[in-house]
Image 1 (cartoon, rainbow, N blue to C red):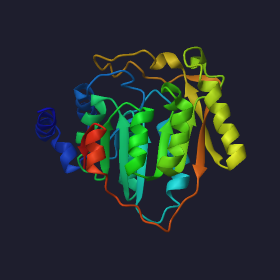
Image 2: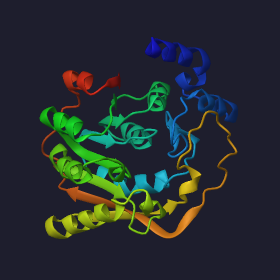
Image 3: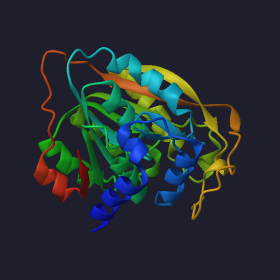
Image 4: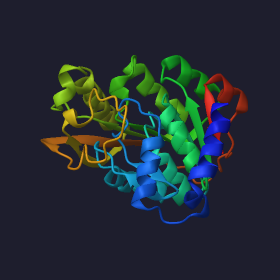
Length: 279
């Protein structure tokens, strides 16, 4: 019923999106006000069929995309991507638009499902509405393998973060992890941040890897502990950044251009892991 409602909602109110027209400010406002309001609603950019309708107050999405684009551009074939903690789906939607890709997103928000339906011109999008746990990723690893695994600023939020980090290397040929630095102001509430940074640095030194880029961190009060029940479009009209606080984007693994990925996703695992969208 929920899915049917969303489809009707799009057909009735977002004809301009279906036709591929440039969205007006009023239409962008309507889209934002229609989305499910949950914690970190405004954290990441919101992109609809290639158009930015909201610039997030978290780390700069376009800068981070340019970092991973260095890897994406090296593929000469279709690719399969796993996006953990996908937030508003910015990276998966851009990759699906710019490359021949199947992008599998894992997160827990109804908002992301709304955004999936609004991106009606995109193919190759899968959404698993699933908490990121060791059990869920272990099951996924039994049936699926990915060319690229993305884990942007999510691992310090999960339990068993070391075990989950290690498991990512079984899930993908290339593993790209962004993590806050030890001097991040959130360390007092996420005390595994220094461990995770040092663990990835040690892994890079021992088994290879590189840092694709460093991204300036925003001030936490812009989005931490905010549950948005309504959208005030002027609420965050200026992003503030922490001084000399940069996250690192780590990249591990080797690109394989010889073997083509199967651009399908196992339907049994889709159902087992809370699949809600497959286009």
